[in-house]
View 1 (cartoon, rainbow, N blue to C red):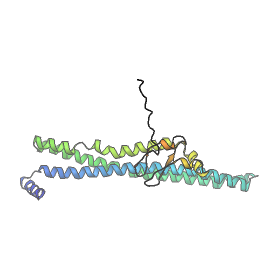
View 2: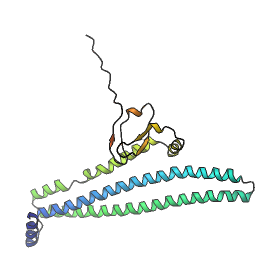
View 3: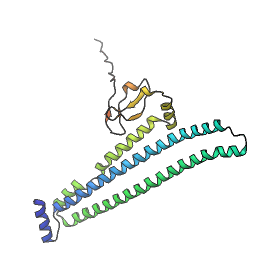
View 4: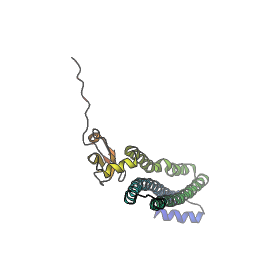
Length: 237
């Protein structure tokens, strides 16, 4: 009811009230937060999909090459060309898939970035209008409440990026991890999230029970199974 009265008064006086500015800035801030979250999620999805394709395509490429080589054993030039044909075709398909994914994600990132720029431009215009037309006290309150969004909005994005970088460092080489999984090695040392059952890489056998980690999918903390207590040094009397 109060907001409707403020709108009616602003229409009569041909000027916006503080409530109208707050409503407009709150809507813009919510759009900025949702867009930045979508941007961070898109970056994380692209990194995961690219790593998955690179890992399994290399393993599959090696297996196909070995199967074709030992099944055909080319002895002439024609047989060798026929042997290289499917292998080369598979490489071209993987290369084309990576380029297509890169083009798609670049296009989506550009669209999201343009939308963020437009929202920031709208917000700066509204804040400039607040500084010019509002009283000092009202303008100060509005700017303090809705002006500093960057520090708040960077939280989820930075958290996802930091966890993704930590997850990438912990896993090491992608091919090595795939080979360990195929050969059924070190599965007992896998960091499995107890909330969503997501695989978060492998840990050293001697460190497995003492590692706390945050899941890269649900972002929940998995505490260590064993908590080490530092020894108590007794003072000599």
